[in-house]
Length: 283
Image 1 (cartoon, rainbow, N blue to C red):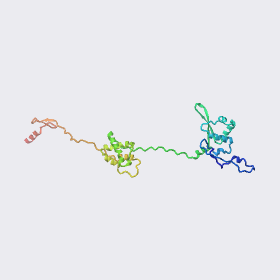
Image 2 (image 1 turned 120 degrees about the horizontal axis):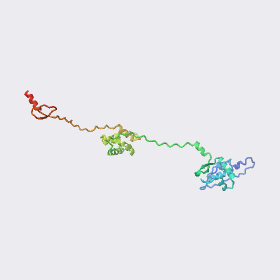
Image 3 (image 1 turned 60 degrees about the horizontal axis):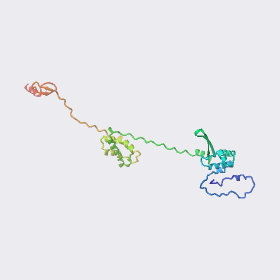
């Protein structure tokens, strides 16, 4: 025992109650030397237990000083101490009754049943903790990020076009440090930027549309803001190029003029222009 409570009542003093012997002023004097190795802290509630026998107190002290795994069955203790098995068994029952020992049976490999002895240096403390100490706070579940809004898709997602879009997104933080994007966010937004570039919007205008008039407060999810702008401000698709060519004139079939035998094109047989003119002048 390393510590002692001098204010605790002594059993020897309690037994003198009722006797008329005068006190002579004698008593216990402690000569303590601090232990630094090979010592065990024993509570006064065990060392000065008011109800247990001296054998039970001594046996309880001995058991608490043993290392983990030591044999504390009745047979081993009987071989260690001069007291017989009957007295040691009775002392162990006292320790069990006051909570200093617990014995439980366990089944091990091979089907054998063994007895394990649990030594409690403060009976009831474990029970009190389970009822008085609040339960440890539960670890918060990791919150899943809300998916980013969908972005437009280019009609022809060529690798060069997507790479140009990714490079544009990677340079946005030069305009505003808050627009520093992760690789995952840039991969999500790149098709939306490619859709703008496919619509013949210059890269400088795409960059301006994404970075101008940003809010002053911190941007908690800049990728979500950019995804919204890419969708809400998407320019219309330019009309396809069309080559406007004159419609071909249908050629009339060849006709042979009965007046001069000259061939000419006309929708129906008849005279050529010259013969029709001569005929009108003759009339």
